[in-house]
Every structure is written in C-alpha cells, then in structure tokens.
Image 1 (cartoon, rainbow, N blue to C red):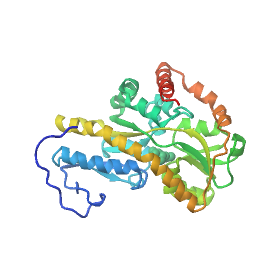
Image 2 (tube, helix red, strand yellow):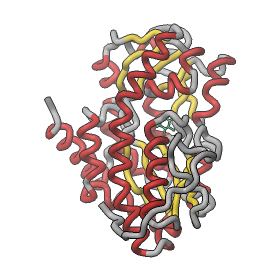
Image 3 (cartoon, rainbow, N blue to C red):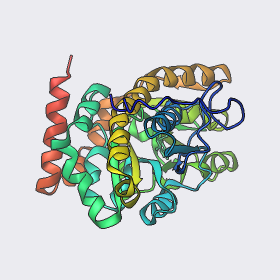
Image 4 (cartoon, rainbow, N blue to C red):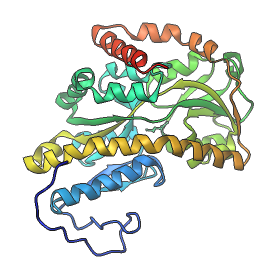
Length: 338
Ligand code: GCU
C-alpha cells in the first residue's frame, strides 16, 4: 500500500459530517471532490466511496478527500456526466450504457448474456490490456478518466402485471431501460416496449402506470421501493453490466504526482470492497422486498430470452475493437467456468 509518509495523522474532530459513525471528518480537506451517485447511502458503492475519501484524506495529509452525493442529488447520470466532462463535478459512478454516448464500443460490456459470472467480469475489468484503449478513448475526447469497472449485479425484469416466464409474457408491457440505444434494442428484442429514462423518475412512473415495469438488480428494486408498485420480479438474468468509477481527467492531472499515485493505489481496494459487498446487499434487498409482498419468480425460460437477443448481440459485434473485447469476455467466461 501507499502512504507511509510518516506524518502523524491527527484524527479530525468527531461528530457532524455525513460520514459513517466514528469516521474521520474529511470536510476540512483542502480540495474536496464531489462524487455523484444515483443510489442510496446503504449501497456498497457508496460505502466504498466514503472509505476511499477518508483513505485519500489520510494518504494526502488532508489535501484531498471525497464528498459523496447520493440519491441522484446532482442529477441523472446522463446529465452529471456532462458536468464531469467540463469539471464542475469531479467524480461519479455511472452505468455502463450511458458511456456508449461517448464511445459506442462500450456496448460490448452492456449486451445481454455477455458475462457468465461476477468473477469473469472482474477479471476483464482488472486487465488493462483488455480495457485500456477503450478507457483512453474517452480521456482524449471528453476529459473523462475511467478509474475502474465495478460489478453492478444481475438485472432482471419486473412489472406490476404478472410474473414473466417467456418473451411472449412481455408483450405490450412498457419497460424502463437505461438511457442508451443498446438497452432500447435489447428490451424490444425481448418482447417489451422500451422507455429509456433516468433512475430517479422510475418510481412515480410505475405508480401512475406510465410504466408497467423496469429491469434492474434486486438492490434498486428494494431501495427505490419499486417493489411496492411493480411486485412481480422475474429472473430473466439478461444483463450483468458494469458501473464505472469516473474522474475528470484535468482534475486527476492537476494533483501533485505523489498524491495522484497514492490516490490511484487506493482504487483497486475500493473496487474490491464494493464488489464484495454487492452480493450480500442483493440478498438482503430481496429478503426485504419479499417482506412487503414482492414476488420473485425463478421459473423463467432463460434460453428463450437468450435466443430473442442473439441477433442483436451478433450484429453489435461489428468492428475489430468490439470483436477483441468480445473475445476477451469469452475467454474470461471459460477461465471461470464451473
Ligand atoms: C444500477 C446501476 C446504476 C444505474 C441503475 C439504472 O443501479 O448500478 O449505475 O444507473 O442501475 O438502472 O439506472
């Protein structure tokens, strides 16, 4: 690990702040990076970001820290990433599909039935030989540095009408997807009507009936109370797409080299913490949803769904860059099989 600067850390005054109890108050850091997050304070990505901010504060003797803004307080991911690109927001977590607006080749990691396991996914994102060029492409054009790809669960469909067992069951249902063409094409191939929007609007759209359903992991289903208004959750297991941790490139480059290095050294640990916390969080989320009457259906013809999107997957792998990424995913799937 980094640090080892030797300067004794003076724990800041306890109390106050938004941090976890007993945590160091980092609000007096010389530079406080705003990190935008569209989920709750209970999410393992939030907890990992808070910890990262404290570790950064300590590693840089109080020169840098992070303040996490949860619950989409700074806006939808699609809006916030524009602010990140021009530097008014320094950091954020973003869902993979939103990155397609900067470089469409990101699509490979957002296609249905791509990753077979969380392990395969982690292996791909830990390998700079695989993801390095993809990441660099948005640095040059958009001032966006991708610090890491993270596990963001397995996504399944849910709606207010019925349990889903096969593609025909989705017919006529208006389903929210993330804001990208790939996600629209995917849900339509699966048989539903697509409605792309930011995450924060989904609850009320479900409540008013403007939407019949959405597709997401158990954590969003529970934390944003979609479980109250769209209680039929069916395990289509159609997506395992990453989130990315981003920072404005200029902001990163402006850090003194030593601080930047210390910061970058902290990232893998933070990612691991978030990824490890995810599985338990998803299980707890399911249990909480069941308690209020949500119904989880495991009797799903996953093969039929996989078939419904096979053409979409194939036609999306349409250049050399995507083919290489696709091959790397397949290799990781195999290496982690069984
Ligand atoms: C997940 C993912 C988010 C994403 C959200 C969504 O929660 O972690 O990054 O924004 O889904 O569906 O919008």
